[in-house]
Image (spheres, rainbow, N blue to C red):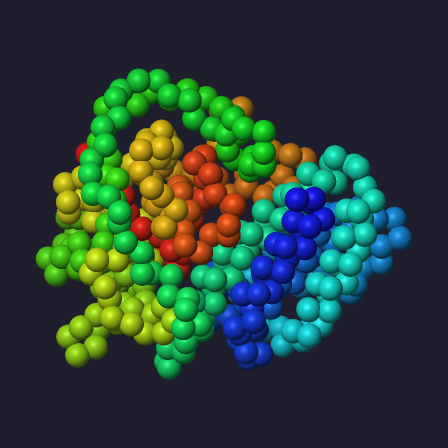
Length: 382
């Protein structure tokens, strides 16, 4: 597949998801960290315009001079921008204008891709496509957050449940102590935070081949765990009490039964399905309750060849920090990962919302420990 074909395919996948939205859905932002669908559509387009077309296409004319201010996310090198919390305030430009923007940029990108051999340009396009795939997953989770906080719990797509996933195995795998190599070693694309191949020493450990289920998590809840400060990190205990946390995100008790909001609407919690939308604090407390722990990201990477993964992003007990010899690129592209290496925890694997061909064992996702709107789950270690 040529890069031009891949470009068109990935860009179309973003639009395909949005076919299930109505026009009022595109601009809604109900919380700071979940951006409107319209913003995602424009921001991913802005990425190609800003980092590729403006630099490598000599005859390119910027679509709208205001869009750099409106759709820049966090790139200080590129200029000022609106606050993230204000992304839902933009009733203008219209969604039609944003679709026009995408078409305009796509036309120029395809022309450029069909005529260039510049490797730096091609590498930036590959980065841009992986960036778009990250936003495809964010589109899924941000749309779910928006609709999941609508009092009617509307159906996005009756065939789009995404939480009806089950374990296919139930065992403990032993990993022997020793030195292991960590980091990406292939020739294909990876993010800079996966580089810096290095050795780590791991003690003997046993890791579950299965993820925690809703039924197991219900036992944790019914034991009074959300009221037992002994199970929680201090910051987690503060988070539980300040936010009155009693259950995973999207769970609602109705007539003494638990339901959860899915993109297919409100449905009964299936005790056999994998628990989802769990914060690091909840994952850690559950592990404490079970007398076990979460794996480090290094343990997870080495053990991942022993079990199936990819249904939930899996919390690890590793802070998001640079690997040895990590080097940020100069300029705006260097802001992509490195500047976020503070106050975040690493998640490994992928989820049911992750775009196809956008996962690998060395992929390092990262979020604040209280965040749980992603499809996150729990794997335990002894």
